[in-house]
Amino acid sequence: MQSGPSGELLEGLLSGRLDAALVDGPLEFAGLDGVPLCDERLVLITEADHPPVRSALDVEGRSVFTFLQGCSYRMRLGAWFAHDHAAMGRAMEIESYPGMLACVIAGSGVALMSESMLASLPGRENVAVHPLAEPFDRATTWLMWRKGMIGANLNAWIEQQQTVYPTAPVQVRAIA
Image 1 (tube, one colour):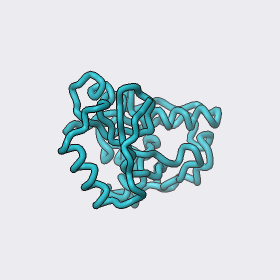
Image 2: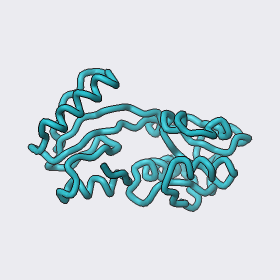
Image 3: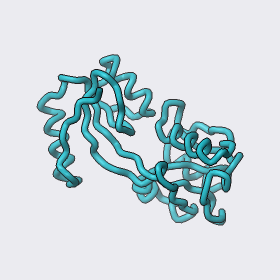
Image 4: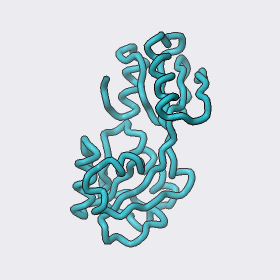
C-alpha cells in the first residue's frame, strides 16, 4: 500500500510498479481498467471567521495548502480559480490533511478536501466550510489497474468494498 498524488500513483501503475491505484477519476488512459468506488463532496476550508465563499474571487491571492504537483485536488483547485478568473495564491505543499487543517485554522490560507476527510479530523470545528459550485463540488474515487491484470485478490477487494459501501452495482469499465 502506498499513498501519493493521483499523478504519481498513475505513473506507478502504468510503469508496472503498482498493481492497482485509488485515484480521482474518471480517467482516460489506454491500457487501464477501473471501477468507481465512491463519490465525494469537496469543500473549501478557511479560518473560522472567514465570510462565506461564493467564488474563488472571495479567496483570491490567499495561500493554498495542497499536496505535491500531480495531486488531482490541487489541479481541481487551480481550475476553480481559473474558472472564476481569480489569482490563486502560492501553493504551499503539505504532506497530510491534519497539517493542512492546522495551517488553515491558524489563518494562513485555504485548502480543498473531501467533506468525509474533514469530518474525520480532530479540530474540524475550528474552520469554516464552504461548498463549491458545480462542476468543482464532487470527486469520484476510482480503483484502477492495468488492462487484463485483475486477479482474485483485486476482485475480492472490489466485492468487499461493494458490501461495506453499497451503492449502485459497480461494473468494471475498460478505459479507452
